[in-house]
Amino acid sequence: MKLREVLDIALEAGEILLRNGAETYRVEESITKICNAYGHPCEAIVLPTGIFLTVYSSEYESETSVRRIKVRTLDLTKIDRVNSFSRKITYNTMSYEEARKELEGIKALKFYPVPVQLISSMSVSFAYALIFGGKITDGVIAFAIGALLYLLNLYMAKSGYFPFLMYFVIGFSSGFISMISELLIPNGNAYIIIISSIIMFLPGVAMTNGIRDLLASDTISGLTRLGEAFLTVLALGMGVWLAILTVHYII
Image 1 (spheres, helix red, strand yellow):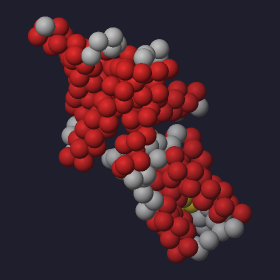
Image 2 (image 1 turned 180 degrees about the horizontal axis):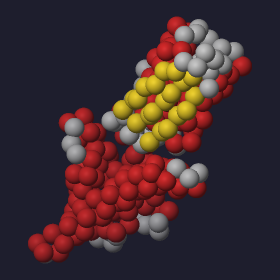
Image 3 (image 1 turned 45 degrees about the horizontal axis):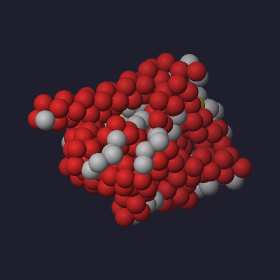
């Protein structure tokens, strides 16, 4: 395989991993495995917003490229598929066309259908309300709010809203509806409902990856991920806080 083709395959695999929430060390490790499988040493530097890769040939030639990552989400299925791809290519190298086709297939994988995601979000909110000591009434309210927040998040994400604003609106909506429901429905606990309905938006994976990157001495990536997680929690908290103040002021 030509040097440029090896570079392209490695970058494509790294981009899929980074776009879908993989840790920095995992992206660098997969890129290195792919390049080494074709007999080319490489140097890879991965940040949350980009990949810098240089691949060397035995004739002291090199190819360098940078891949900018603007949109990131979380899809463990794609991460698992690329991991399997990098392991498979180590033992059985593919042609450029075969490798490219497999990576395109991984990129084309779809999320679970919206109805399935909606039901999952509602079920998570209901279950956490009971886990946190709430009553069935709290669970039912959290169930309904969880559905509303998921649909709201889906709409804002498709409309291209600024992420900080999205989480602020989600926090405010959760807090406001929960506080109103406590007034209208007896024996309800608004705070349990709030926590249960927004818990699925908390950046647990980002915090875990940030700590993992720091432990692996990837300081910039670790601090960046932890900073994003902190801002997400801050936006949710500010939204809830403003909603509670608003309801108390109205009452």
